[in-house]
Length: 264
Ligand SMILES: NC(=O)c1ccc[n+]([C@@H]2O[C@H](COP(=O)([O-])OP(=O)(O)OC[C@H]3O[C@@H](n4cnc5c(N)ncnc54)[C@H](OP(=O)(O)O)[C@@H]3O)[C@@H](O)[C@H]2O)c1
Image (cartoon, rainbow, N blue to C red; front, side):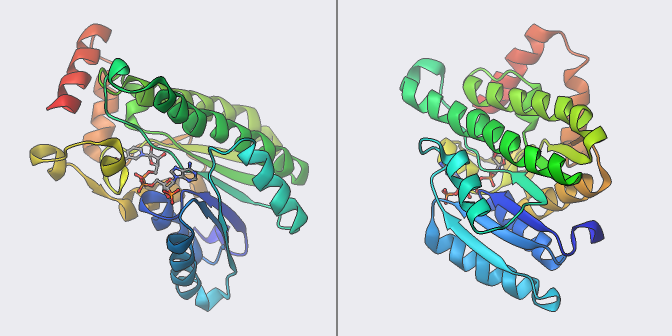
């Protein structure tokens, strides 16, 4: 991750889980940071920890507490960073959530909120910061998707569909922006030990618990993949083979199986 030393990264969803782990690892690699999420207290704690992790490099870490679901959040954030004269070398598009509920068991607005954060805000941030990076001829964007992006999941359909969008967008932009000096990688993790399942209302027990990866490991794989210019990174053999197997199974079986595994 030497390539990130002396650079500046914007990490969304940096108050917990995978985003927090990435922030710490980028700090240790000597990267300045802008940490974004809603919980200001948690972000300030993270900023302290990042400053300690990056002390040898004298890194700088700023906190912006904001709701990325607020109207025009991506433009507001982009404008704020411009006014502070803080150009971004790296964008980590990580903030996201999903509810595990059948379509009609959730109010429509909850489905729309998932789409707004996981798809709309992610796309807006990508557009705004990619334009700046192309202008400078260099940049790195890491889109946090999911193995759910490869599997339609009955009982979690909207979330899986938002992540299919992220995977598709990331793979296409990797080709589109490479000639202009911008690396785009997509991280597609499987089950990871974070606050995600609490927010999603998931029960994680038995074999599902045993299959959880640590946020640190997932973050490390994602950042190494970004540094090496990998188009898609799927951490862990179990999840790599799930994505590979998904391509071989008939579509209807695959969808039923995904629904059953998530429901158990
Ligand atoms: N954990 C898994 O099993 C798993 C698997 C595959 C993919 N993922 C993806 O990994 C990414 C990170 O999730 P995680 O597992 O690390 O879960 P997490 O611990 O719940 O972290 C989610 C982060 O997103 C932030 N966030 C949520 N809503 C926000 C909003 N409206 N505005 C600003 N920030 C917001 C949260 O901060 P605040 O609450 O402070 O705002 C938090 O920092 C997500 O995109 C998720 O879909 C997770």
